[in-house]
Amino acid sequence: MTNTAVIACTIGTTDAGAALGLEAWVDDHKFFDSEHVTQSQQLIVEVDDSQEQDHELRFVLKNKLPEHTKIDTAGNIVSDARLTVTDIGFDAIDLGHMIVEQAVYTHDFNGTGARGQHKFYGEMGCNGTVTLKFTTPIYLWLLEHM
Image (cartoon, rainbow, N blue to C red; front, side):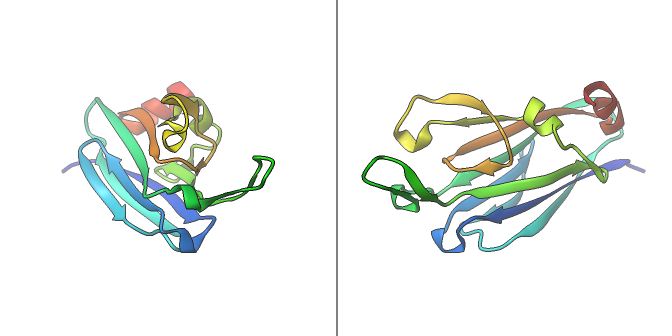
């Protein structure tokens, strides 16, 4: 019998008409792929929790175009289509601020800046990848990082 851990989160969008796409992965397993996120929904995936192993949870924002960001004549962003990834939890334990501390958002401002790594605060506004590295058993990882 295999022990599993459940990873869950809620995804959403700030602009349902923007046709922003999202992929969600655990290691090499894509468990969600949408070309157009239009509403809030919960994603759930199980991982083998029976042995000590390194893992990587990834969220990939795709299809962001320059017209998804409205800029005024002074260069200020007036509105911007973004995807949200919130309520990330392992086995019903909300990771909360651990996401800010542990996850990395890699992007290049949709080609307008250098590729960089940034903290992830729950919103993706540029094509890129949020990565959270963790280990199983999940409870040991949680104890080490809480």
